[in-house]
Structures are given as structure tokens and as C-alpha cells.
Image (cartoon, rainbow, N blue to C red; front, side):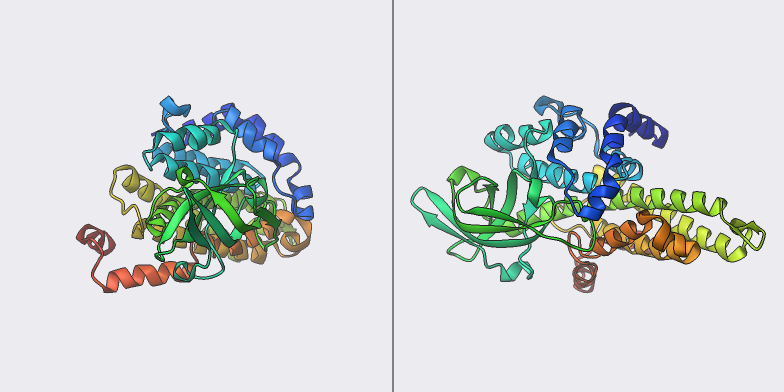
Length: 385
């Protein structure tokens, strides 16, 4: 595990030029709602960023999970384009769960190309309904399958080559499968949302899409999707932390140059208290992230729905929302009119309330497990200490 200074130097030395290039046109893309260009993900693969945490024998950098989490946090802190690490990590999440399937063909045809940046991938799961109401159908036809339905709220849809998606088979089971953007019957429709406007959001329409048997990746698709979402919540927590650190630094820098009543605004007790609250939010979130990464790296994790990971995502999101509102309170008109970064951050925080499972859904799931007595004793003792 590298130190914070080591990680900052690593990111600057290996990917600083790339991140600077990505950041240059951020404001234009935000106003226009344009997706981060596909070429940047190819460059991220070519420079070893996408594959940094994957095994070296498949072209990765072999970094451990804690280092990868720290790298993701630093990316979000340094890169002015918040959608870039968000979309990139959607693809690394897909590659990770495909690698875990233990199938060499998936590694050759999907994982390695994603790591190299030759292919982009994302998750297409939601149908604006709960998983038990999934309407997309996967029907057996001859030696293969046909997939019909639609998926909503897809991050990175307009730049994705491959979609990890799910449908119900004739027995009613949720089954995972892989669909290519250029498959017959596939249509990707651009969509817009309140947050992460440059993430290439979209809707995936599936009209009798032929799916070969080798693209079906397991009968228990619901558990498979939850494994992805487990990983997604962990990485999101790292990214949110980096975004929070960047916003706090930006806010303090502005306040140091602001004068009210003939003196620096930073000498006002209410401003100092607000900055104190913001700093506390950032530092406690960083502590939660570090302990969660350490626990997962040690293997103390439920691969399907981990309470600690889900709680960390929930906590980080709530702290980020608080940070955004505090920034508006102390900066006033500058945050509203003068610098678009604060509004972008606030909008992205609202999006995080729904990302990888809504905050309310996480609360319900954790509450149900706790009240049913299904929390491991070790976790109970950690809560009490």
C-alpha cells in the first residue's frame, strides 16, 4: 500500500498530462451536455490507468485494492472532469466481475481489451423498477438466445462498446449476458440528467437481439449484478472522497481572497465554523473509506451485499451533499453565479443519492439484515466500540 504522497506523485507522473488534457474542455462539455470523448478512455488504457489494479499476466499493473482506491480518490481530486473517473470505473467494474467468472474466453475477448482501452464497457441493469419487476426477456432460440426489453439510467451508455445486462429467462430467473452496441436490434438513446451531465447517459433498447450462448454469464444474474454493485459502491466512495477534497480546497482558496467589512472573511467565526464542519466531513469520510478498503482487502467482505461497503457509500454521499450546501452558504453569489464548479458538484451529489442503489434502498437493506439478526458478530462488536 502506497502512502498518500506516493499516490499523488504516481498519478501526477503517470497520468497528469492525460488528466490535464481531459480537464481543459470540461466547462464547455458541461454546458453542452456532451459526453467525455471516447478517445480519452483509449488513452487511459494505453497509459496503464484502466488496468492498474488488474493482474500483470493479463496486461494490468498488479496494484492492490487499497492502492487502487487511493488512486481513484486522487483522480477525482485532480481531474476537473468528474465524469471521466466515473465512466472509466464503470468499465473496470465490468472487467472485474467478468474476470471473476473464471472463464478464459471472457478474459480474452472482454477483460484484456477493456484493460488496454480497446473496448469500453458499462452496466445496463435498471428498468426504472426494482430488480424483481424486471421486464427484459431472454428467450432460448436454437443454440442461442434472443434478448428483448429496455434499460434506463445507464452511465457511459453513449460511449460503451459492450453492455453487461440482465433479462429474465423462461423460468423467471434473472440471467446475465453481454450485448454489443453494434449488435442487430440494439439502439442506444442519449438521455440527460441532473448530475454527471458529461457521463454519456443513455437508454438501451433491445429489440430481439441475438445473444450467443458464450455471451451468457451465469444463471444467478441477480447475485451477479449485486457483486458488481458491491464493487461499484466501494469505488464510488473513493471517488466521492476525492471530489470532496477538491471542493473544500477550492472553497478555502476563494474565501482567503474575500474581504467583508474591511477584513478577510476567513476571520469571521461563522465562516471558520463552516470550514471546520466541511473539514470534519472530509476527514471522517476519508477515514471511513480507508477502513472499508482495508477490510475488503483483507477478505472480510460479503461479495453480494456488504453492509460496510454500502454504509460507506451512504455516508460519503450524505457528507458530500452537506459539503455542497455549506459551500453555497459561505460563498453566496460566487458559488451561484461566479464559479460553475460548485453547481456542478451539487448536481453530481444529487445524482449520487441514486447511484448504485438509492440511499433509502441501502437503508432498507441494512435495516432488514440487522433486525433479522443476519449481521455477523464481528460487525456488531465494531459498531459498539
